[in-house]
Length: 135
Image (cartoon, rainbow, N blue to C red; front, top):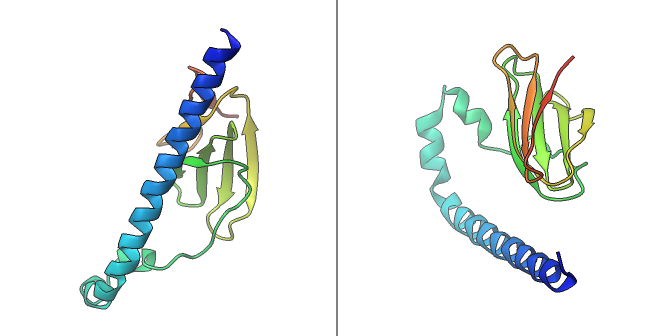
């Protein structure tokens, strides 16, 4: 691949990231404007486990690039995340501690999933591979 083509691809990727960031900012702004309606909605959710999701409990901040995908393990104890930093990370849901970093993709990881038995993690990457992680 020529340097000119590689440069054009990189520029296109950067432009796509910029557009996604702008869209995310617009969504956040819209959510902020809708918070005025939250108390009424919260009344409807009282007694529901969904009510616990209304406030942010913590942030896990060890990825070095965009986080593209998250999944909660079937046991409810772990969160798995995939990122543009080419890693899959396993976090403790209870305290937010990083449990493990899985490396092996050569490009962005855009999808993660935990098997129903909780034994395996599956990740999809822009490197055209599906990673299967397990004991």
